[in-house]
Image 1 (spheres, rainbow, N blue to C red):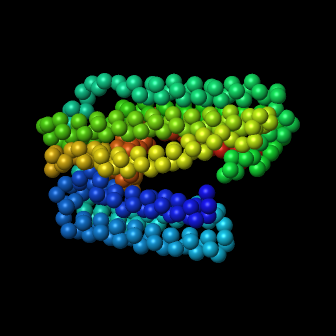
Image 2 (cartoon, rainbow, N blue to C red; image 1 turned 45 degrees about the vertical axis):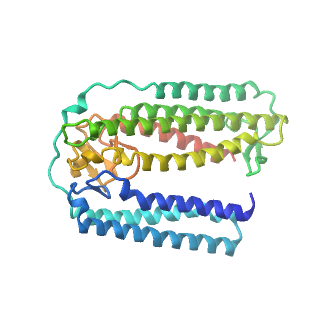
Image 3 (cartoon, rainbow, N blue to C red; image 1 turned 90 degrees about the vertical axis):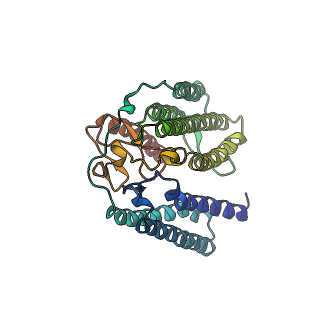
Length: 367
């Protein structure tokens, strides 16, 4: 990839991130305004729309400033390492803009508890997607671990622990259990962890509207299944990429290859493009929470935790000890978030994130 292509690619990624933030208020559930439930009618009023317009102007201005800072830094220091700062700049600015919009929306928020909906208790047919995802991810992780363990004794005293953009090793370290087995173990942990999350997503709490038809609940079910399948595909893709990366790294260490399998780079690029395109598709096809599918019922009020402002902190963190749900629909963002009032949910996420952080730390120490 030439320098020009690298610059264009990173600017396109930045533009995609900015675009997603820009359009979000237009694909959110009607009645929700930057993490605050303001009611269906009030969300269409001038004061609510003014908050949205301020958000859109802010996103455009901050994006242009972030692009300018990144390009200026690149031409000043002549280093491609500047470009990873672009997503960080965009995220930091969007967070500030979100908090401003959130506190403005709070003045319009609906007080009181929303009505409950009995339809939430009706039985559902279990999805087989998470089960098959777990099986495939376990197989991928076990294959990577078995291959590394089976060739451990044949590896030389120094093994490759880092690979450059070309796929060739650029860091070698003394052979040890962690320098050889860390990537295979990470493959299994990531795959199994993401697979388990899909089980809970497939059973995430449905936040429907208080309406006598099935429009809202059908929209929720279709949205939830689409998000579940998306994350199932993500889990399998990540596992396949890490497994192939681990196996090819062992082959380089054994002297059977000079670089990683070319398919590893192809998978990494496809994974990045797939994630972005998948989110775009879900956003425009379904809208957050199926908003685009429930338009015929969008005048009815939201119910349960999604419409209860007292259960949300900053519009992003759901805390309800009386709710047994582990995953609930996001108020701002896409997909689902954890019920921080449920100790099981906190323990689940803590174990997954903790395992990833420990392995990442070991990976940093070994290099």
